Image: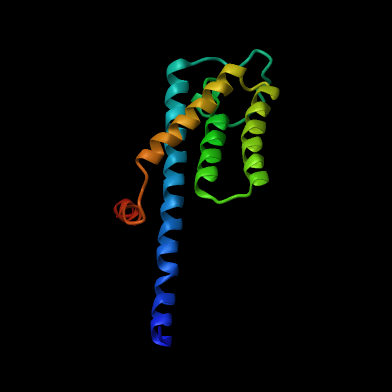
Length: 153
């Protein structure tokens, strides 16, 4: 392999990597947007009030934020946790930290009095399941830029 071949191969290298990173970011963004919509719909349908010991100190809230079931923090924590564990190569201690982060976020919602335990458990299950749906509909490096090109028109 001559110098010209090496330069040509080197020039091809970063583009597929950037496309892959872009598709991962687009898929994660779409998953989080889907999560926001799904949690809002479920909260609007179920309309479970927050725990009685919840201190209502949120000044700017949307109508669905008055309700407790499911925990949006827990769904997003589970979704991001599965996303990170599946798409990043991490050492075992870092993988444990990612899972602990998701659990701590979920436990904090109960400790702050914003949610009941069942709200958080269902939120974790919903986030876990939602990642499976997103994984099934995964955006490839070719379809992600096309989707955003259509969106920006």
